[in-house]
Image (cartoon, rainbow, N blue to C red; front, side, top):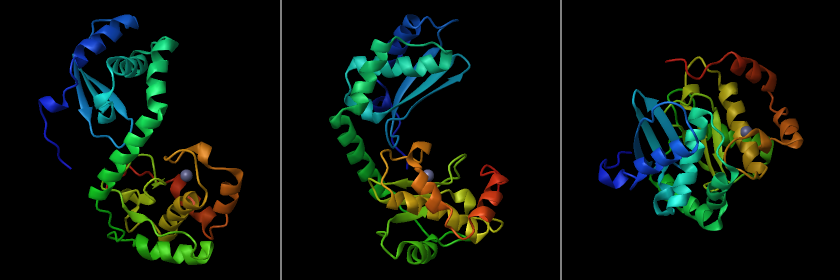
Length: 243
Ligand SMILES: [Zn+2]
């Protein structure tokens, strides 16, 4: 999805805010030139990349209507990470409070829903058909009780994650890197089965995190018929390998 570039993406006064926080954290060396833009990330993601003398900062556009102290607090988190400085707790708390507020949560959900609607998902890949697999797994392991999700392959290959379930959207996306001939069907089946277990076991967070894998979850995961084989394959499989 392409979005217009230009002044509307610029964070007003963003460079000055980052300069200020750079000084406040006592970061070493000469401060870089800060280019601070809003970016349509899926949630509250913010990134900073240092290239030569320029620091490219992308703040989630959820912050578009946030007051300056929240931007400062986000800047402290990013610069603290980049320069290994520990920002004062008071400064961090401002961002935390903003991120956890009901209003922000609601805004993120609304944004993600509207963006997801525009995202076409295709379950039929070049080598593996997720739709057929889903129907088969739902019948075999879940007595067809799981509600059919928005289902498809990721647009690009992901580096680390194999699959992702988003409970807010009832959506399962599987890493496109697995849609290859040399990846056996039981491996894709296992990854899909894992995400289906997330559908079955509600979790506190949207993303696939360790905290969301309970003992019960892990036990049920082992019921997958090719669990051991699939784990063995994935251990030696790097998703970054080129096609
Ligand atoms: Zn998981």
